Length: 290
Image: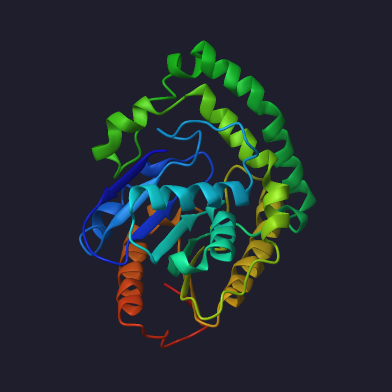
């Protein structure tokens, strides 16, 4: 498994990426937070530079692999675990199985267990159609169709320092396998984590997307319906601890670490100091917009 650590200090912040992403997803966050403490991003099995694994890619297997990686790498425990999107489910599994490893959790628009049971039926159909198209997409990647059409070399603004890594890691057929495996295990992952928590007084910071920013690739009615449900699930996440705080990132889509990097870096830095000083949230269980 691939692990990339920078900076010095404690507690360490361990970064877990969203579905289909590797450690470079944190390119705007890790360099800044590394000036404050040790920060380690990693690639789940099958993504980035981590080898694929044939086992079921459910939350309990994935959190167990991270636990082993932390031990093998000698990462100081307890640490802060921070994750984006689907990693939010894996974080719940980790907190349930290895509570002694953690001193805090940071959810970046984290997914909710069994969320597909709650989102609009029209969105489920869109997602199912996308899943059915993945084998064809993998074939086109293997044939070089995407690369010929220049779809494997783009580097988002702000990620220039990782440009060579990003280009080398784009359009890799085996990574489609990894995406499919995690998607196919999503129901099992949800069943494993639906009852995870609450986690006592473990400090939890929650970043949520702006519900007014709607995905452009979904019909407006579907996007609006999903925004309502997503907002409910994000608010419910505060119940995972007696010490929690939620921030709605204004004007941000799902990838808050990209859209509102300033907010993420500032608030995680403050959260780090709070954890170091063993302080409680001054505005515990609040939800604010920034």
